[in-house]
Image 1: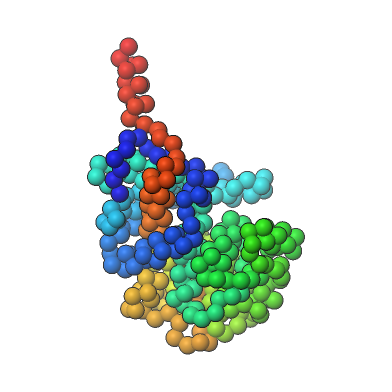
Image 2 (image 1 turned 60 degrees about the horizontal axis):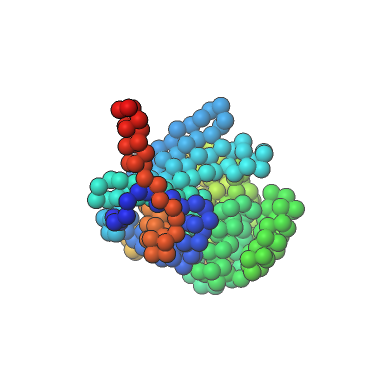
Amino acid sequence: MSSVHTGTLLLCDADVRALLTPQDAYAAVRQSFLDHAAKVIHSPARVSAPLGRQQAVLLAMPASRDDPPGIGVKLVTVFPMNQAADGPRVRALYVLFDPDNGAPIAAMDAEFLTQIRTASASAVATVELFPGSRTTVALFGTGAQALGHAWVFASVLGSKTFLVVGRTPERGRAFVERLRTLGIGGEAVDAREALDRARVVVTATTSRVPVLDDDDVLAGTHINAIGTFQPDAAELPEGLVVRSRVVVDTLDAIRTSGDLAKPLSHGTVTEERLSTELSDVMIGIRHGRSHKSDITIYKSVGTSFLDIAVAQIAFAHALERGIGRRFDFGAVEGAFAAARAR
């Protein structure tokens, strides 16, 4: 997407939230999965640079596409120790470049972008893997991703009630109150009750160990597991993965997520069993749910082809509505050159 304007459009978090609706994000994400299947969108495996002294990591997630043309990268920092000081664990920035000349045309806060694209992908997976009523959802987690899932599922799928499982009962109740301020119904419950009452589940936690028991997951349940993206952390018990039909956002999930990497390394499941991408199910070349009693798992670790699709939507809407501020990196470079010449 080329811009006729000069300079780089800067979009803060409030701008991005004003520009992206659940419906627009869901449509962009659904089409992006189909573009991935058609191989018209390019999404290399993300690059990570760990910072051991803080147990932190920097992630770079580039992508490009042909229609609509675009090229960009998301930069993400994950600092788990921030949580102890009630600071954000994850910060993200998305940069779009002009596909005609490579100039930076937009730089936007990507926290909300990541929330809404991840939740939209889970919604697409739920439609594909759990056809039928989705009025009640069990939601493990009370952070930003949990909130994004509640908002998208309520807006796009028509989910009416969220059974919230927090790290503590107090956190669960506080999150339910937050949902109510948004007009979304919720109830704080424990894990066993949530799994007994809901057939659609979202795990959106930072836990490094399973947040639910295998025996509590009933036949016919669909799980969107989106919280873990490192090989030494797992939200789901190994036995559950072994007895479920697993679908991934990309094959990168097999090696980067402990939910899948651990059972694979133990030999309790084969790589073939884990190698169905959601886009394969959408175009009918692989099976998702075969029987009503199947337990299905959509495992997401995040993929850059979804980021660029949603970033392009935000950028296009910003141009249409005149939102954002301009910054000319070239002008700054010129000023430095002039100063040196003097």
